[in-house]
Each structure stands twice: as C-alpha cells, then as structure tokens.
Length: 215
Image (cartoon, rainbow, N blue to C red; front, side, top):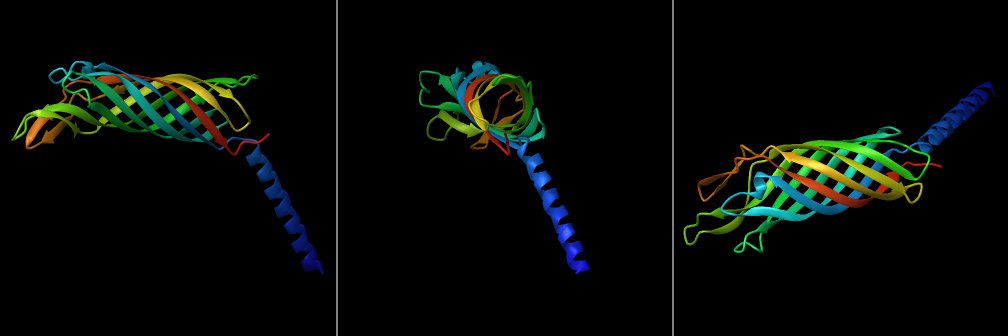
C-alpha cells in the first residue's frame, strides 16, 4: 500500500511536470519557416563581363529554416536560387544562375501591434553557373558552365506582419556580396576566370510560418 502511494505520488509529480513543460512549450515559438521570392538586382563585376555577357535584373526564390534561441532571435539555414538575365543579343535565352546555401541570423523588434521589424545577416557559399563564351572544337558558343564556389555574406532589413498567431507576411531587402575574384571554371581543358567580386540586391515578399507558438 505504501509503495502504491509513493508510485502514485511520483506519477502525479511527473504528470504535473510534463504539464508545466507543455505549457512552457506552448508559450514560445520554436521554429520558423519562410518562403519568399522577388527581384534580384546585380552589381559589380557581373554587370560588365565576358564579351558583353552582362547580368541584368532577374528573380530569386528562397527558403529559411530557423530556430528561436530567444523570443526575438532566430538562427538557421537558408537556400536561395537566383536567376539573372543576360543582356546580350546573341545570348537572349541564357542566364546567370546562383545556388546559395547560407547560415543566417535574425533579430526581431517586437511591438504591441501586428507589425514586427527585423534585421538579418547571412554567410555562406555561392555556387555560380555563368553563361560564358567558350571555345569549342566545332564552333565557339555561349554555354552555362559551373564555376568554383565562392564565399558570400550579406545583411538585410525587413518587416513582418502577423495575419494569425502562427503565420504572416513579410517584405525584405537584402544586400548579398560574393567574393568571386579568384574563382574559375574549366571547359574542354580551357580555364575561364571570373576575376571580380560582385553583388546582388534582393527585394523579396514572402510568408512566414511559426511552429510551437501558443496563445
């Protein structure tokens, strides 16, 4: 009987502890997922490069997976795809493409309204695939070839609007710098060098979903 009472008492403590932990979990956001797309505006060496294959404004798409280390601080991983138009009459059906895995951090500024501004920083690797005028055995031509990965970093500003307790919309502007002055590619045993850093300004609109949010 005494053992049963002790087991029952310990069970009540365990149930109460789990209940408190569940309440704590319900009172804070744990994860954020964002999906966004918009304009990608190039700058630097990519706008004046390789026999007139200058990059022009294109578009991008990105996704964030972040963890709340504090109520207003998140950090996580991001992947962004950018496709820049090529401003050349003989290469109108080609693009410059950037595949960008990043680590990011955000700092939100909570307010009593549904609006929540924030700042963001990121660092990662750009994996560029540039349209390049290449030498070919049969005929010289324009071809998209993969260049070495390049270190990239940037920062941005945004504002988030809660449409519900668990989700909302945001508008964000980011500056993205790519240290590409030493990257190169090889095609048919010929080395092609990029030789310049470049950048993009990304203006995006998207949705944000919160997981683990309570009342």
